[in-house]
Image (cartoon, rainbow, N blue to C red; front, side, top):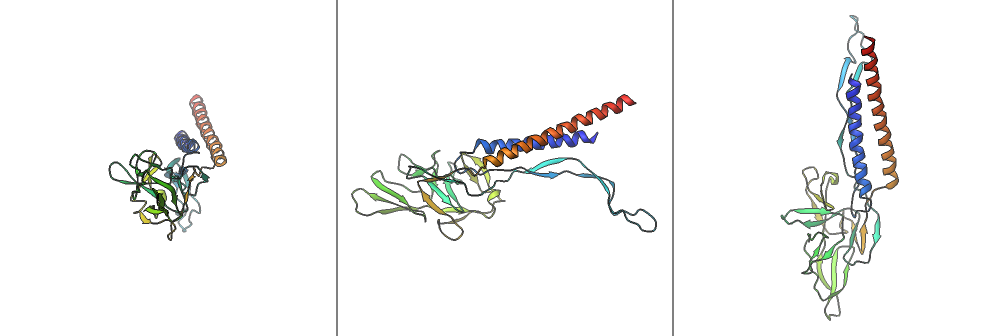
Length: 261
């Protein structure tokens, strides 16, 4: 009975849906995390009566046909790249992007990764790095005798060096943006990688046209909506239960048919 396979596809799809939701909930407090959703598509149809086929020699056409679907599948788990909540911190090297763009990070293998997580630290040499030690690109070095570190909304990094009476510019933080942000590949460690679907990175300074501004001593928290995720979880659970009931009903019908013969 096809109903068994159809219901099974529904159960598998909802199982993956619950996994996506659970990952969103698990990362509710992850800095720069972007929530995902599961997108579904119906599977192939069997045409028992082809719509539009001729029903008589006089040329009458069938106004509607008979099609039986074969189930559902998860076709994509796109990320929702909306702005997350901004929270103040006491760390002068914490940065948040208010608007479009990603920080650029140089990986150990030389590749460039992208992140919305601006919880940066100073390395042993004073270089601005991520919490995993990856260098922020372009590289910015903060001298050990620097005080009064400031990063303005355009990404200009300044500090007072030693006994100087005025601030010196230490570097310029740049951002990258993409035509299709959802096409980026998540790498873990709050990092994304460029793909053919995302398009090439467009690099510019914060505040330039199409780029967001920087906020010092702030971090962007996950954009996960707790209430919405719980609601989606309940819906997924109910859908799974209904599909399991279809499996049970189909099994009972097969049993009745077998017993009747």
